[in-house]
Image (cartoon, rainbow, N blue to C red; front, side):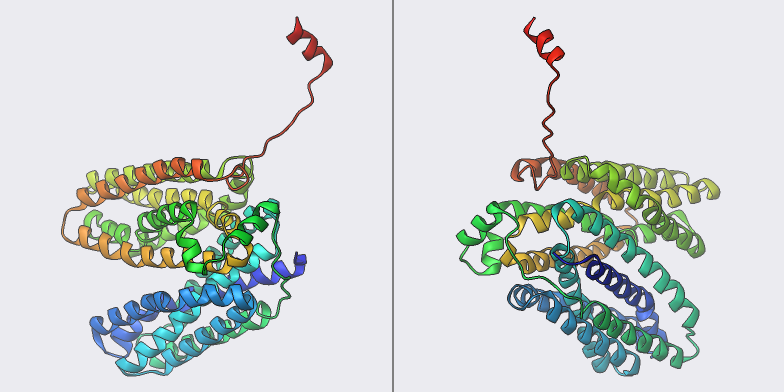
Length: 426
């Protein structure tokens, strides 16, 4: 197992990666559309290529982690991201921007499963939930601070400010390579007899072994629904609903998104203490219940949109409730993937999970904005509420496909007192 210092360097790497993403992602559209003057179609193509890069590299990422370890893959990902970010700031035409966007997206996507695998290598089962919860908190904090810092640099009237922005991000990813890419990682060894047996029995290729793992497939289905319904909506579908249907001002929307991040930062380590003593499937189902309340609050906002103050409170509450649900999920999904994966296929499982997440986050905004933009916001809310109910159901159904250890069930044997035994006998 890694030292505490190595784990600390991995978590710093998570924060650096998130800071870099938050630093530029909110401003990529305006950079392509307005600063370079290429129009919204070119900006949309840039984002599409950024997302498609994940589909291209993640299958190879998992295989590379399993064969060579997470550190070389992280170094490769950080190098690609730094190259793509720097090239993005220098590019002026559509072809160059598309190529830079592909390199940028490929690098960011490659880094994520490598960092997740490093966390697993640096922790035992007892510490894993806290480590993933801390990662989630640092990612949210890093993205928030990155967006805030980037906003102080961006000046649409000054193209050099955007070039400077992407150059700083390139340096950030080089910092990720320096801090985390040089951390010592132990050799992968089976965690227990059960894991050793699974590794010995599965002689298939990584992706084929994952496809044959019914528990992992069920978890991927559930994770896809989670990322489609929550992460794929609150920055797109819910934002469109708030601004177009409810009439929320952009400044208020920014306040609501800030409330989401603040909720996560404040609650995360408190929530992880609660989830440590509960089934992971229970925590996931509870997140679904909280999100149902969020969609109910969205319905209230839509019905009272003529009352500006009350509607504003409702919109902020939606984002805060999303944050509560996210805090419940952070200590569960990553550790379950780690416990399901045979040690020799940990990289493949993390990459497969990241691929499902990427697809869901890409599809979610398209569906949400389409439904809200067509004026059918009640249908949008009903569809999202239905998906959330399905999250609750699938979370509870997953319970039967996990071992007690994978579901965080701890069986405590307490010695009975002699007096109690006499009372029972009597």
